[in-house]
Image (cartoon, rainbow, N blue to C red; front, top):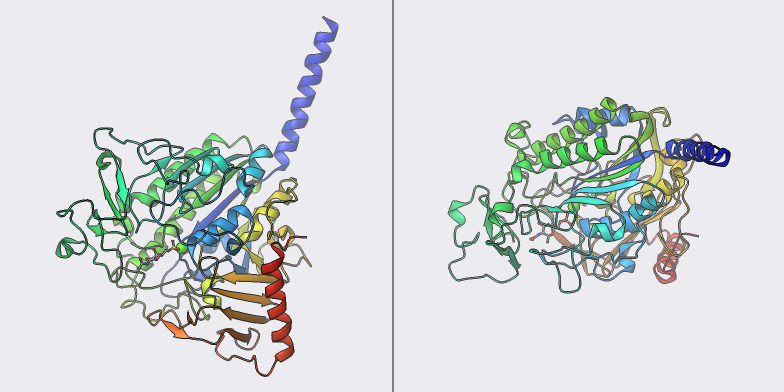
Length: 512
Ligand code: NG6
Ligand code: CA
């Protein structure tokens, strides 16, 4: 009897100790915007629209002027944010097509698997675009695995690819919800029948016309990349995506308010097709591209309100970032080019999405953790690829030696600690494993264009490929817009950076 009492006393003590340890672990919310440029929000200088919620986040935390994503397209940035490893090291990490199999293999350590092992509840809600299913691709009518649940997420509620690619259905954990077995979902690359309506054959019926690509299957009056049939009961309306992400995220936060959680809020805004909810349409002078930014800002506000309501703001690190720089015309005629006016989506930088000029990867990057981060502006160099190592550090978790090969612990810089430094170098890439690299070391920036041309024109004019030499060197301190190639006058710097870039690629890892 006595020993039983002692045992229950001991287990009660252990429980308290365990809970104390858990209480030290901050919740983590990563809000990743899609295609949002450095100059697209008012706290980074936008004057033609207002983003009060994102601005508030910045005012209450650290706003980074050298915050980057690691690639200028979606799939490689998301791959490297989750795995902590540069995407150029792994074949098959370029922009994923509709029927892409899972790109991150089960067993790969990710920011989610590390936090999950550390006792966190983990979720990804929103755009995935990292493939689903085994080698033969997604089984849309069956179990969609492997996927997020096989690499560390307890739960997911997804848009499987991007919304300009088919199909327009959600994925909840391993299944497409509301699928009627009598109306199976088929997704493919070839027109399924001669009379299948497409953006080419039924162009005059579209509610938003396409400008390039995006002329296959039509859903909700918008033609997409790829073909699909069936699954009608499961299909969503583009207008409702943002509301759905917010609704599902609030559910997840409420459910896990008493234990540590990690939420990857993966917005589809402001990717094409930009179809904000009716209540945001026409809210800016910039057309749907601007309205989608306002919708994104609303999402941020709703998430922050939820943290306040549940008294979690002082226990939650919020990171706001983007997956690549901006683009105006990305395949639909949504007036983004015509209505841009004075708005400079990439801020002072050149290039944008698809480019290794600064506009492609230098994006809004904000951290907030009330009571732990002193508000301010930081010029330290940080990147989405560092979130894995940095968040692991904040949660008191160790990174396995063989994982997260390029993720640096910049947690002190993320918290804005006095004297804390970010990275001393960063590699940027465009898309895929072969192509174009940028290496920033201090104020120097080396470009290595293995392709003969690059998208380097400013985003306000139409993005177009122009011929470039294989190597270029810029001094960002004097020339933030990368206009003057100074490689001839700085041969020693060029030699050093070229060698450093080759070594980073050849070594297979940069994390010590
Ligand atoms: C491109 C698409 C573009 C966009 C991009 C992926 C065409 C002509 N262009 O191939 O619209 O979908 O892929 O964007 O189809 S990302 O942000 O997901 O990387
Ligand atoms: Ca993107």
